[in-house]
Amino acid sequence: MKIIDVKKDVLSKNDEIAAGIRGKLKDKGILALNFISSPGSGKTTLLVKTIEDLKSRIPIAVIEGDQQTDNDAKRIAATGVPVIQINTQSSCHLDAAMVEGALEKLGFVGPGLLFIENVGNLVCPASYDLGEEMKVALVSVTEGEDKPVKYPKAFRSSSAMVITKTDLLPHLDLDMARLLDYSTKVNPALKVFHLSAKSGDGLDDWYGFLLSMYHSLNP
Amino acid sequence: MHEMSVAMSIVDIAVSQLKESDAARVLKVNVAVGELSGVEASAVEFCYSACARGTAAEGSELVIERVAARAVCPECSCEFHPEHSLAICPQCGDFGGKIVSGEELYVDQISVE
Ligand SMILES: Nc1nc2c(ncn2[C@@H]2O[C@H](COP(=O)(O)OP(=O)(O)O)[C@@H](O)[C@H]2O)c(=O)[nH]1
Ligand SMILES: [Mg+2]
Ligand SMILES: [Zn+2]
Ligand SMILES: [Zn+2]
Image (cartoon, rainbow over all chains, first blue to last red; front, side, top):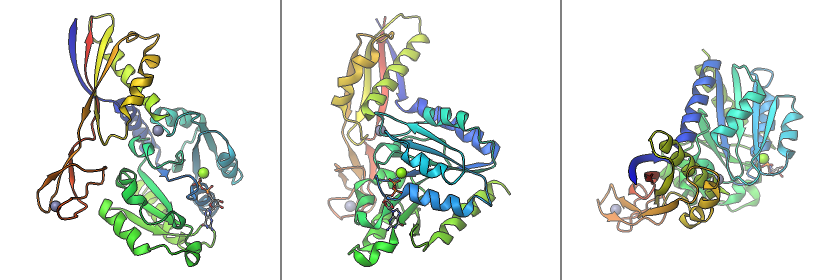
């Protein structure tokens, strides 16, 4: 019997594939964003709205992760942009190998924006690098103040936090200052957006952010 | 579920390390699992043998080395046991506790023959 010293991260294979994806996307001028949130925070709704408003200016493609149905992919497909649905079945997160396969099927040549909607869950998607430029964590105003402290890894691995459904604020007792205080404590570098895909409030800021990132990638 | 893909990655790593050696099969795999890694060690143990079936790691033993969580407070420098990966200092309430251990999730060593 022989003992081999390994010291290899369990997610190292995923990270290698993700690094490969990141390189390819960069070469093609594709800006990829990985959207994570609890189920129902408004990811698909925000994506649909963003696509409708930006598709005439920038090519967009979408990868949809969903455990069972293709309802979200259908909502995206209705906007006319290319979309690939990954049915993760029993898996609670997307991994880099799934995204690599989806990218091959998608045939998105770029340059453009690639939106990846992860499976609705704030736990393990935080650990899986998909080769994205950044993760964007969504929290809807109906979810209370403490998501950032309950799921610190999700908010630490994200570069932006989008507070969604702000049209509902008048009906709620959300302590916004506390939510912002928590998120800053967990990740001081987090860029924060407040918006409502329904009323349209705050969307300009969000689009400005996407466009400036896109243009710095494709000067 | 999540632990299934973790168990599969462990088997993959063990088998690919085996291939780089001159041995034929994996007998034992030691994996470090931190308390804050978000991985339920018992659930990984539960699906490991099913994942190893049909590979050169079939029948191998999985040994999980649990790593306790420790954090150090940047404000008062006290060392403490954080409840989760947001390390809040029990002495001064600072949120910025630096995790020094507990987030590990790696294959430590394998025994082969
Ligand atoms: N009032 C309001 N409802 C919204 C908004 N965005 C999404 N929703 C609703 O929230 C629910 C979940 O949205 P969805 O986009 O499917 O969430 P996902 O699971 O994160 O993709 C749907 O019923 C949406 O209509 C918003 O800005 N305002
Ligand atoms: Mg959705
Ligand atoms: Zn998972
Ligand atoms: Zn302290």
